[in-house]
Length: 156
Image (cartoon, rainbow, N blue to C red; front, side, top):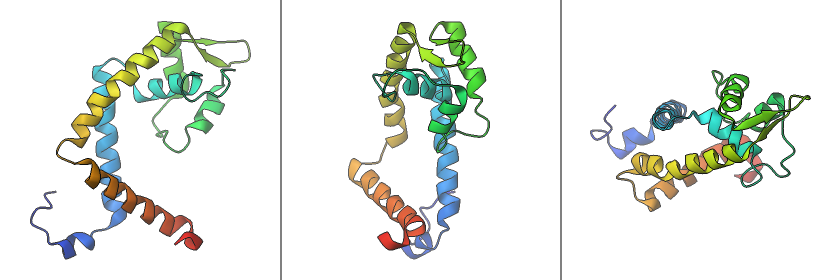
């Protein structure tokens, strides 16, 4: 939808849930497609991040698929199959699995995680094209306020 013809008042009357949903789906699909072009999936990147002591793992002790799913619960999509994604990374030599089904990152996996991370600025640049940092920051502040308005009435 082209919003250029709408007035500020018409834009302000637009439903938040619709536009945040459209944005989420479009940005997720775009990001996942760019990552696929580079040879990895978003869930694979998340697995490596959560298992790396150089990223999200506090102790490097390894995690089970249910523990990983719990850690990713706020952004994991219903179609994401962490077990299948972990098996792919096992086949690449990027993860190992012990007898208790705890997954750990290998040195090769850490190198792959770093390579994936290095791709993020290029993807971000495509997403942020034509948007200056001040406008992006303002949009995030508005979204934060919307979230606080519906989750923490005392924080209003």
